[in-house]
Image (cartoon, rainbow, N blue to C red; front, top):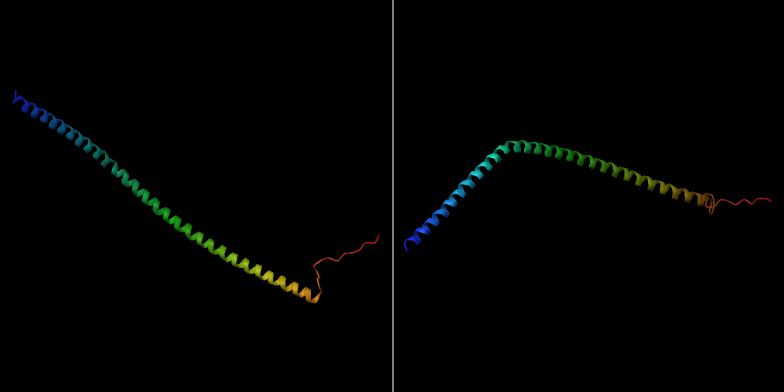
Amino acid sequence: MLSSLPVILLLLASLCFLAMTVTMVLTAREFRETLRKFNAILPGADHALQEARQSLREMHQLLARVNTASRKVEAVVHDACEVVSGTIGQVARWRRTAQTFLKTHVGNGAGADPRRHHRRR
């Protein structure tokens, strides 16, 4: 009976080894099949990646043109604001000059209030 225990343990170990070997072979087969499928997909993926790169290049060029255009618009708006500011300053100076002229040449308060006309009844 003592000799049957080592035989049973050896048999059990052999069965475990056989199960592991079958599992590894099946896993390797599935892995190989997966790699074949992946390899079949790669040419299409390469084409898609090339199209994506081309689209990104075109998008980059478009954004560069938009950036240039927005900078030009910014410069035009800045120049227009400078012109308007200068014009407002000039009009303010003309107004002050006109007020000073009216005060000195026409009299006190001239042009400030309209004259009141008395109606006859």
